[in-house]
Length: 308
Ligand SMILES: *[C@@H]1O[C@H](CO)[C@@H](O)[C@H](O)[C@H]1NC(C)=O
Ligand SMILES: *[C@@H]1O[C@H](CO)[C@@H](O)[C@H](O)[C@H]1NC(C)=O
Ligand SMILES: *[C@@H]1O[C@H](CO)[C@@H](O)[C@H](O)[C@H]1NC(C)=O
Ligand SMILES: *[C@@H]1O[C@H](CO)[C@@H](O)[C@H](O)[C@H]1NC(C)=O
Image 1 (cartoon, rainbow, N blue to C red):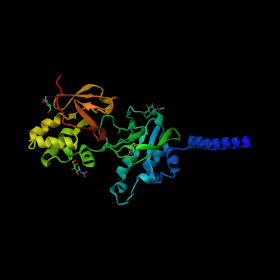
Image 2 (image 1 turned 90 degrees about the vertical axis):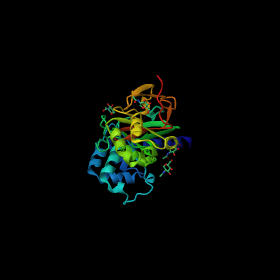
Image 3 (image 1 turned 180 degrees about the horizontal axis):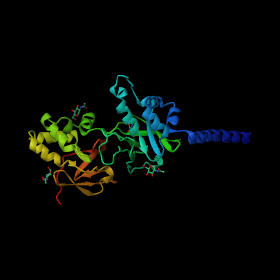
Image 4 (image 1 turned 45 degrees about the vertical axis):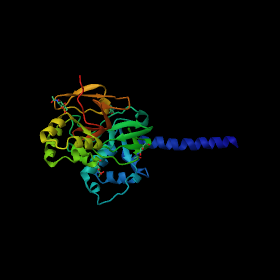
């Protein structure tokens, strides 16, 4: 009795294994995605755009992070996103990450590979490509490719010819302008600027390869309470210390280096690897929000110049 049982177990174990292996060897990314019962929405979105069909049929040496059907809580055909072909194409290019990143390569130390998104309306950095952030947080393997939309990998390491597919918990977005990020994430120090300051903000922060520090809503409220009537010139002077350009500094770059801000004074970026990264003595409460021309970090307090 024992022997046949073990044998059949063994056979039934081997069969699916062989099936998967041989399928993987001849299946492109689109074929693999199409074969997943929980990726029907993303399949449909890819298939109605010939450029995406081409990308997903031929891409190699890539890691794709696809949101499962249940994460599209309401596919509303009237939602602008689903009728906006360019925006959808951008997202579906941005979830194709260059290089092979099985979950075993996603550790507590974040890595920042490039993605297949190169549309210059959304990517204006000298890198020429959007960036993904892969990092393990609280034991979860996470991925982020846009302006603050992190997803957990819920099923990882499916193989297609030359690449890897991870299923993720929720949809991701693309980089956005600083103003759109502020509106989307409700960063009031930017989104609630007096109209007369908005143009200055755009001019000062619009250069290619910019790192912008924004303060949290709580810190902004405290600041407003202490300085209720900031003048335009004070605003412009202050903003200069929150902008580094040219220079895109991700969390991984907070290694104790000093960077020159737009107003000429230096800012010390530190703490990488300790669990808390800082700009001078301000703690970054949210890092790596990818913007079209750089990156935003949110601080828990206004920046105070360090004494050197
Ligand atoms: C795969 O992609 C990575 C990241 O772009 C690159 O460094 C590597 O050279 C590529 N490998 C091959 C075999 O093309
Ligand atoms: C991802 O995992 C974290 C940690 O378990 C959890 O707090 C978060 O809600 C998850 N996010 C999603 C979108 O499922
Ligand atoms: C945005 O943040 C402010 C300040 O924290 C809060 O009063 C407001 O309700 C928030 N708005 C939205 C839409 O979440
Ligand atoms: C830059 O801004 C900081 C903070 O407002 C200020 O203390 C510093 O003096 C400014 N530097 C220059 C060179 O104006």
